[in-house]
Image (cartoon, rainbow, N blue to C red; front, side, top):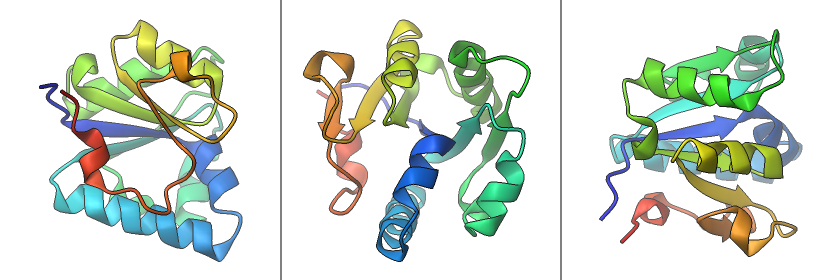
Length: 143
């Protein structure tokens, strides 16, 4: 069974999902559920306003690591930096993203990738979920 110690969320997904109050409520419920499961959490972005954005959404307290990299569009260093700052080996991290590039980068780093959305091909992620409305920490159980 795969040992999952932490989750990394891509800010772009969070922004798209949190456009309405129901999406933001689902996201917060899921983050609370992960925290209750003693999961370490990170949010990453190439946007240098990342900290301001998570503060506006009132979700900054959920994350152990808030990491941006506005100098480089390559996602790999950002994912590795988040795992390192969480003090977790990349293979013990799960990346939540709605973008194919982020999912591919996670897979190249031996991270588990969970694709969020309905337009993700099944070979792009270890798991695919339509949204966070009915998801809890049991999604991190991999055999």
